[in-house]
Length: 204
Image (cartoon, rainbow, N blue to C red; front, side, top):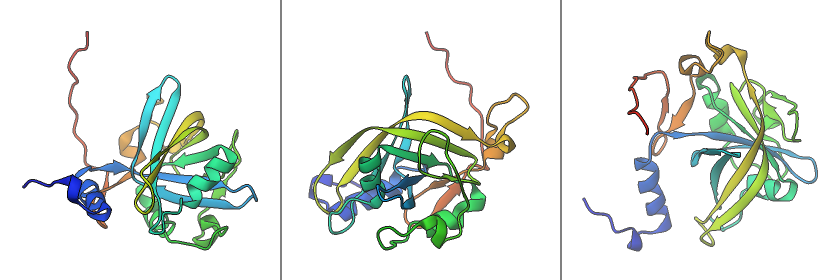
């Protein structure tokens, strides 16, 4: 099957990408507006970038009217955000927080998601997240215009909170205990419960 992306609608292009690029980790991003209103939303185009300096990124697609998500607007206004990882036990709350709420309404409050204070930034942490990365804004790269366009947010990681419950005997994160979820296409998700190990080739 050959798919010519140069003639696809933005929606069709997005759907093919989301169905094929799997599994995708989920960034559950908490922000705060310049008026002090807290926001929480999930994004599945997300990954780490480099450890020098520690940097991650996520992509937020504009709504059908071409308007930036509250998450991006808040980050551009304050320069701060937190990326929380999503364990299997919080899947329902994460999914609920994707709903479109009136501007300024807090997903923490609307969906009963417990929060805790961050250390170096103002947005809240998801209290039950196994890992939360406190970030300051590095840059926002705008890709495209209008509906379906995206703001790619790059953040400098300034601190992390790692639950002791996901640490193994060696003091490192044990993926069996982390039990995070990832996004597939459509309404499908995957967990990290099934794993296998491969020894990586030697690097010169």
